[in-house]
Image (tube, rainbow, N blue to C red; front, side, top):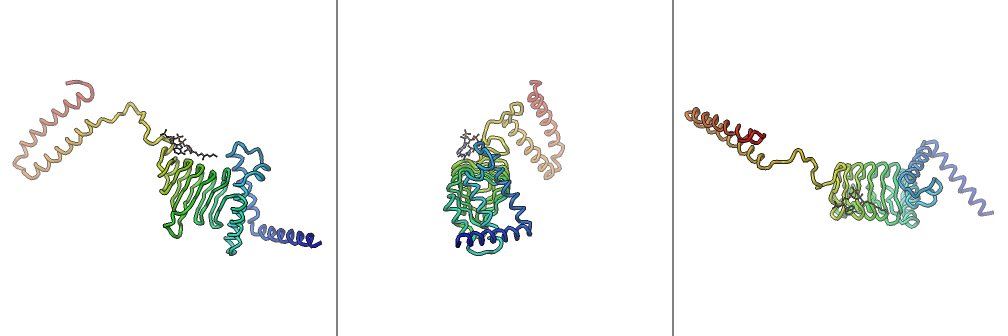
Length: 270
Ligand SMILES: CC(C)(COP(=O)(O)OP(=O)(O)OC[C@H]1O[C@@H](n2cnc3c(N)ncnc32)[C@H](O)[C@@H]1OP(=O)(O)O)[C@@H](O)C(=O)NCCC(=O)NCCS
């Protein structure tokens, strides 16, 4: 009898909370967010066969849903309860997310365990983290001291992103990387310390395959010397106007010689 009474009370309380949320429009938004979170798993994990599997077998999703509840209560200003939910979440899934952390739509933590997301972290839409990722502080900053991840960022297994750094849109952080500086959009960073191996989709440091426009360091050096000599001649002419005709004669001669050099450079031969 007592159990029945308790169950009825719990159902009534849940219905009251659901009714209150529905009246604020939060329930509708919450349902949409959960749909996006489930869809993210189906899109990004080829092993996920359907909605039921996503809801039952993905600790990343369980952690995210519990976080969304904790975050909601945190925003209402309810003390302690959000932290308790967060710790319960950690016990259940091995994923620790501070209730204040802001997480966008379509967030996916694959495999779960060992992920830590700090208090002032801000995560955009469609971000993917693998197991063992830390979005933490360096221990030296106050206020905003955790990373900001823009939309479509992917962070590989075991990577550590530390401090109030910004990881640009579509950036990838390789497994095991340690990142303590901003990462530009569309780039890939690996290693410790993190270094870019791709920027805007192109390999960093790879050979330039534009064989038709090869650099010519000798011609560049000559052009720079000629520019400098002409400047000096003009300064000289201004300082000693009486030498003007002599200098102009020398300049004309120099130009004729330069023309021959440029003709040779462009293929006519001397
Ligand atoms: C970084 C990553 C996203 C690949 O990006 P990419 O742009 O395709 O880079 P490439 O594979 O062309 O590699 C570029 C260079 O970085 C190196 N590299 C790639 N991943 C690396 C990593 N995690 N750590 C160190 N170096 C790495 C490559 O050896 C290569 O070096 P090279 O140019 O000297 O040969 C991928 O390697 C990675 O780490 N993904 C995370 C996957 C993960 O965590 N899976 C968990 C599943 S459970």
